[in-house]
Image (tube, rainbow, N blue to C red; front, side, top):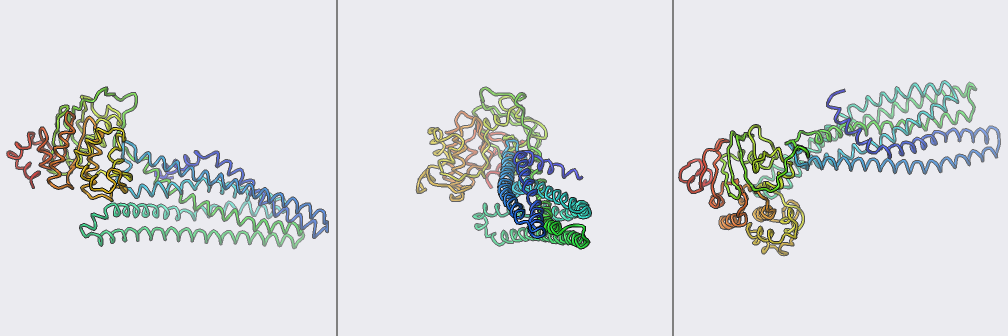
Amino acid sequence: MRKADLPGRSVLWRAVGGQRRDVALGAVLGMGHQTGEALVPVLIGLAVERGVVDGDAGGLLLWLGVLAVVYVGLSFSFRFSARAGERASVTAAHRLRTQLVGRVLAPEGGAEDGRLPGELANTATEDAKRVGAVTMALIVGIAAATGLAVGAVVLLRISLVLGLLVLLGTPLLLWLVHLLSKPLERRSETEQERAARASGVAADLVAGLRVLKGIGAEPAAVARYRRISQESLTATLRAARAEAWQNGVVTILTGAFLALVALVGGRLTARGDISLGELVSSVALALFLIGPLSEFSWVNAQLAQGRASAARIAEVLGADRAVTPSGPSGSTVLRRVEGRLRLRGLSYGSLREVDIDITPGETVGVVTTDPADATALLRCLGRHADPESGAVALDGTELPALSLAEVRAAILVAEHDADLFEGTLLDNVTAAVGAHAAAPVTAAIAASGTDEVVRALPDGPDTAVTARGHSLSGGQRQRVALARALAADAPVLVLHEPTTAVDAVTEAGIAAGIRDVRGGRTTVLVTNSPALLAVTDRVVLIDGGRVTATGTHEHLVHDRAAYRTAVLT
């Protein structure tokens, strides 16, 4: 057994174990159904024996009546077994989807690293569905095994030779079917990986469609998706060929086995070892065995696909967490957030030994000559990553000592590419505070320049916004996202390039609005915009991953060439 298989197997066991009641009910009813199916040939044989061989009309009617009762039982057992199996399958898939969404949205993050959003969506839908289907496969497999066992026992009572033939031949046949499922499992895993990748790329292309059209990159984007889609199609066809090849070979093996059973039964009847009624029962049982053996082929295919999908789900659920959350008993609670930030010897990514002190209520600008420095700083301030060395402290307490919920409530990091959500414009602005907070929301809308957006829209603040805000222009989206960040009224607000998509006049108005609405609260502007830097109390310059200068915007423009290059070009 490969170690890599263990997490996937654990996902499978948890999915099945969580639905053990429905699985057990479905299995019991399925066993009853298959037992009845196996007894039908026996009842037919008895009816033939009494009515045709013995000429007993009463006996014929009696066994036909028993046969009718059995068929009624078969109908009800099949119905409720299928219902229990479907309920188990759907519920298991739903719980897996819930776990996956919870892991992806967990405050400590990490599950989304290296995975496209569409890929994660595919894992939460198709892979979860395939793992959930394993519960139904187990029910069908148990029922099919029961049918084979009952059929073998009946054949043993009819003829020891026929019974031994079935008992010895069936395990061999099942072992061969298992071997045939291995190529399907490998190709199914590849198929799911390629399909998830294609879904992820498609989602990204749709999200950036306006940008692609603006730069004339549609042909390159189409070519990229065509290539990835073709790879997905090739993998799907390979998996389909493997499944068809498996089903075809299994059908041949099953048919050969049943032909052998029928041949042996016919020779025994010709020698007088079994009666005509027993021959009819034997041939009918041989035909009945086609069902359970065919179901084993389906079960093996479902298990193979389920194992492949479970491995992919396990990779997401078991992904390393970006930060380690503090335990409830080990975390410090801040009674009142003053907003004092201190970075000491901070090294993460491209940052090296960064020291910054920000006093409560101060507005500080941070200019970076390398965008990677800004990204690294934002991840550490929002505690989306822990520094490799050094620390970030809030009011004298290092962030890892606080719960993630408290850190995110105290320090709001608003990145420049923040998405909007489907709903109204006002819903997006009040997402963090609720519509009842009228004063902060009104002030935030005015400070961010969103009031101009509201006046330009047909329904004002109640105008519907499509998913990710694609019904708005880039500048409108940016102002609404800024209004949302300002309305949250966080003790510490970190804004990353909030005005890159607006004109110079609007930018100057927004800079003044941020200064006014954030008066008395700590604000960090990570930006290279002169208009925004001009309203800060001081600016910190990070060049080459290190703090190289601190001063007012005017002072640094005159005295630092690296600063002039960063903000004026």
